[in-house]
Length: 130
Image (cartoon, rainbow, N blue to C red):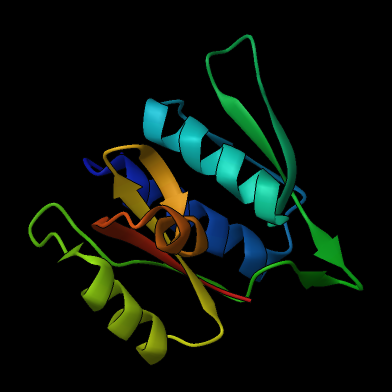
């Protein structure tokens, strides 16, 4: 098992996409629950539920045999955190056009669009390509 829960979770989602799996099982944690809520909100997964065996089963979403996302990438790692303010976030968003960034802010985990609305910076966690 990986020491970094976020990288393990994203790696499992990417493997499930490549192998066209319908469901995956992961270990629960607060960051996983928050990201699953965001993923369900933006339409990357169909849903998730907690099993009796203290695991989460995630239902992958496919449309015409194509996954809802093309790639998930972890940006900040424990060894190197990427902190951004509004100006850096705007420049980062220009570099990664056509993708969505998920940030960890003082108000919780947010999409880059919501960070722009609330003028909030933070740690860039993930990049999602559609």
